[in-house]
Image 1: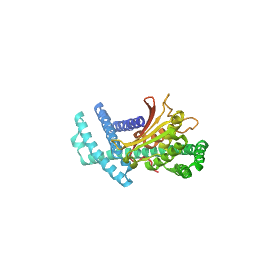
Image 2 (image 1 turned 30 degrees about the vertical axis):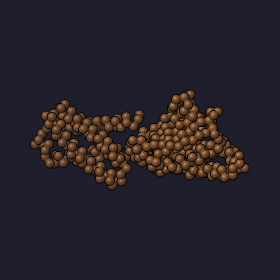
Image 3 (image 1 turned 90 degrees about the vertical axis):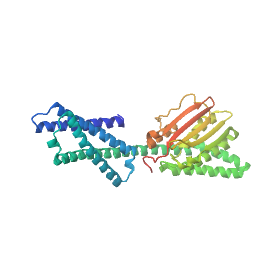
Image 4 (image 1 turned 90 degrees about the horizontal axis):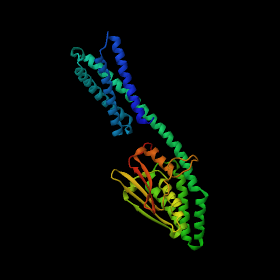
Length: 352
């Protein structure tokens, strides 16, 4: 059962139980209760359901849970008082419409205050339960993220430190030592940058876009030494992209995938083009275009052997940003493959 279904199930069961309890209490204090009065209790319970759903909308729409505890409590108390008054008015209107309003009794100050207090207590209990559920749910998501990030951390370290990559990089440097010593020194510096970045990024959930891009530039420079004229690299980065933070090694993983499954399989090599632009709703669009062709769409589900790559990228985006981020990979004609990611600019849910 997903979260939305669980939410509505608890809402219906909770307020339905309140209606049943109130009907039961009414039958104990009166000789009999009419069907009209029973419908009155049911309609009031439905009003509670709608009003708490509206309160939940306010919480989510205006990010109340990102406020300080004092601000959250203050605004919540005001909201619950307002809803309590609205609930009392709704009770009068409903009873009047059903023909069961008793002005002599219902308009007494003591009755109004007791009903107001009862409504406020109902809202307070609902708020407490929702508050606890929200933070338990976030805590659970944090645990999932931490477990996943540990797996990703090891996978990426293995990816960066795997012997094949080191072997190719060192072979490229060795060929340059006599031919172009300055270029060899630069290549060694880039290798050390990549390895240092791999070791430093392991505890970070997001990093500056510029830091990630610099690592990708180092990586592609090294690959350009190996592929020589077979690899062409183009960058098209808007200035606004540098205002964003992205998950570490995410762009690096996509570029590695483009090299491994695209460029390296082509005799004549090809092009890798990296585009980054800001969307209309403060979203960052990262697009990696490479020469090649997808015969079958790659699996974006986690592999049983713990393999890393695009599947981990998709899972990380889901864990950090939820539905606000997106990932897709597709053919562009018969000669290119495009990988595109959308990342929101808003703060992530669990910033490190």
